[in-house]
View 1: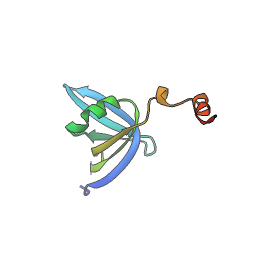
View 2: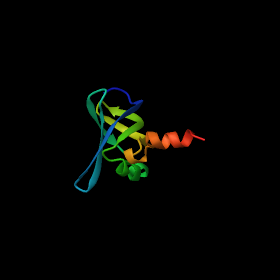
View 3: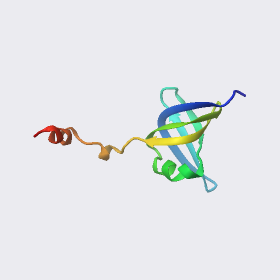
Length: 93
């Protein structure tokens, strides 16, 4: 087994409930693989909110397929991103 190392990754955050327990994964499109993620209780609300969204995580690789998550950052929902017209209105006097 290789030693634990810090990592950061981004991809699609997967969530499902197995036997009443939330399980999380990250599909890294660049690497073309899925990592199972261990999420501490303090991050569970944020992890649940981020289901099926693009996220960036930081953590520690525990084994080749597992990441102990220490941070989650979700991309904004599409309806939260200003349109081009909104941006133009912001810069016009």
